[in-house]
Amino acid sequence: MKKIIIIVLVSIVSFSSKAQDFEILLEAGASDANTLLSNYFEPAFTGFGYGLNGGWFNTAKTHKNLGFDLTVTANLALIPDDALFYTFNNADYRNARLSQGTSRDFPTFFGPTTNPDDIGDITFNPDTENEIRFSAPQGFDPESEFGLNAVPVPMAQLGIGIYKNTDLKVRWTPEIDLDGNGTFKLFGLGVLHDVKQWIPGLKLVPIDLSAFVGFTNMKTEFFIDEAAGQRAQFDVNGLVIQGLISKKFSILTVYGGLGFSSTKTSFALLGDYDIEGIDLPTDPIDFDFNTSSLRATAGLRIKLAILTLHGDYTLQEYNTLTAGVGFSIR
Image (cartoon, rainbow, N blue to C red; front, side, top):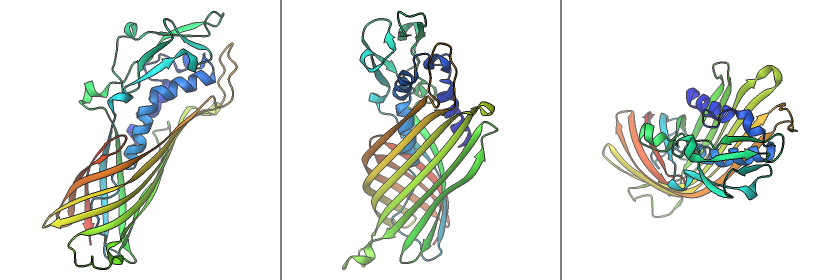
């Protein structure tokens, strides 16, 4: 998790090798830099939010009192094809213009890697003494490197059975130092409750039926120039509400569910940044994405003594593939 967060934040703060120097973006002013950055990174941020919502459950059956499980999952939020490009329209910007034409599609962070000469140029402050031209950023193109366009989000959580066939699930990471580059912390809380017990006539039906709600918050800071108070802040909040059903066949459990997922991801570049000829406000970059989607999950779990292995697929705005391993004691 630490290495993934560092890679994502370094890419955002420095704009990686895709956009030359991050300060070039600020040459266009805070408003245009916010618009361009948000368009470029939207699929990465949105995918991270949906990935953070994955891995909460692998059965509808709750623990007995003080039964528990410890589970580690890998969630892959798949980037849809229509998120590989964004449209740059001159009308959406104050000081930035295409060098040719008024509208053009450029790769997002997950778009294809393209020869810079083929992407096209953007001009900041055209027809002024501060005019600067640079190539639009290329995509990271993970599909060519890894065979898949996806945001990976690992997760670990503890579940414990409490009163009235209810499981309390906790995700928690104390504040972690990111190798001197910043800090990371995470907290999540979920509740899985057996609703079958409250429905007359269902107690004898050999299925498990539960309701789940879970919330996760992740907060990361990355230091650019700590002495000068320059830092980047990346926050993600995720909410899942889902009805679950499962059926056990010996060591195999089939599970599924329908529900709702929402995410809010935000990024801010905090501090003062001095660029000659450009009047920048304090904290010049600040944007966020709010998304919501219906979700449908189907999965399988194998339990060998106390060892569990599971995998599931969730249909939503950014479909998510989850695989996990854990220990469960009823």
